[in-house]
Length: 115
Figure 1 (spheres, rainbow, N blue to C red):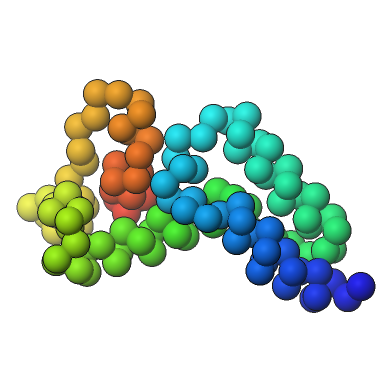
Figure 2: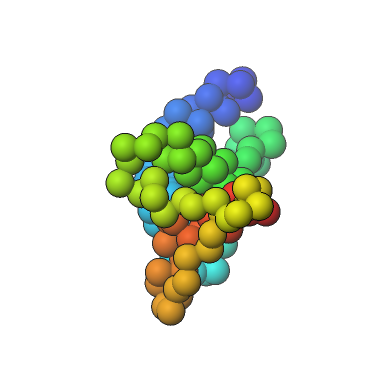
């Protein structure tokens, strides 16, 4: 088969299944789980003979896009959690006591936006 068809199939089916609600679950994945997911992407790269984005890249893109949508919408329930510091360049980090909360969406999004 043509590599464009295979790549399109990967993007439309396998990538969509793997990345469904990725912003909710990827932050709390273990290194072993992330490695297994990346292995699926590498196998798909070998089959399609094209370069595909890594799961980490997809997660970063979607996290940034979703957090920017929340920041732009003042009626979103999480909008108030994205507070700019007095400098106006960085967002206030949320204090977390547990790794479960530290790896959740809002703290991860703030860390990504501050880098």
